[in-house]
Each structure stands twice: as C-alpha cells, then as structure tokens.
Image 1 (cartoon, rainbow, N blue to C red):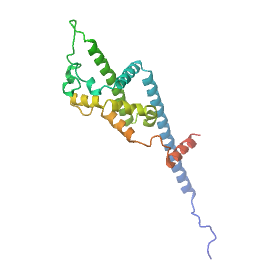
Image 2 (cartoon, rainbow, N blue to C red):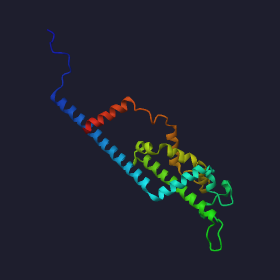
Image 3 (cartoon, rainbow, N blue to C red):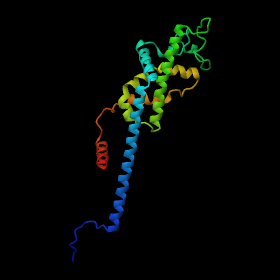
Length: 214
C-alpha cells in the first residue's frame, strides 16, 4: 500500500538546529560587514570635513584653481625662471628650487617667489590626492562616499596637471610619482555607470542590511 505521507523532505530536529546555526552565522557576518562599512563611511566623512576646513589646504586649493584658470601649461611650473616650457631645464631635484634670481641680500625675486608659491600649492593638492588614492586602495576610506563629493574635481585636477606630473617624473627619474592619483582618476573617468541606478542584486543587498539593522 502506497504511503499517504506528502512528498516533502523530512527534516529532523538536528538538521533544523544546524540550519539555524548557519543562518545565524550568515546574519552575524552581514552585520559585521555592515558595521565595518558604516565605520569606513564615517571615517571618510570626517576626512572630507577636515580637508575642507584645513586653512593651508583651502589656500592651496584657491591658488591651484587660479593656476588652472590661467591656461598656462602645467609643466612650466617645474621649469627654472629662464627655462620657458622646456622640461630639460627643469630644476634638478637635489637643488630644490634651482638657482633663481636673487638680490644682494640673497632673496628670491618677486617672480621667483610667485613661481615657488605656485609650485607649493600644486604639490600640496596633488599630495593630498595621492594620499587619498592610497587610502582608498588600502580600504581606509570609502571610495563611493569620497567620489560622490570629489568625482569631477578629482579628475579635473589630475588632467590639468598631467604635464607637471610627467615633468616631475622625468626630473626626479621616478615614474611612480603620483601613480595612485593617476590610476584612480583614470578609473573614475572610464567608469560611465557611477551615477546609474543600482542593479537588482545591489538593491536586494541594501534591503537585507536595512532589515537586519531594524
């Protein structure tokens, strides 16, 4: 006589307990990852606020923007006072700002002081961008949060200084200078889907994280 038991999979109490442990472990892992992500986002916001409030960076940023708007080729900011735009006459790395033109008291001319201050502003902004790229690469900062704030400005800053970056690499014989900045800016520019709506899987993942927190 055929059994009247419905064709369901029979699960013992032990199997249910094991399944409950697995589900609990998965939920705990999701919660841990979510907390880590929240911490990273918070740290990124603090970094942005500190950067935006730093007076030295603010002054350097203002000067940097003026440099971009001037339309002058960026590689000329590395060249000596009488070198024009030639990269071969750029200041040697070991000699700092180069000979310059000094008065009898040993002071730089007004023109050379302007050039020095321009280069200091460029270096400060590019160094901040390089540090940021390294922090994102190492997982210390949340890339999406940072990019939503700086995306276009970050790409613009890099593209406006490609000549300067190339010149300083040649000058110091180090092709790795501002390498992380360059890689991040190029990756962001090539990513055409950043502002697109998230896909189905991402939406479900966000919904799951919200349900766990509730």
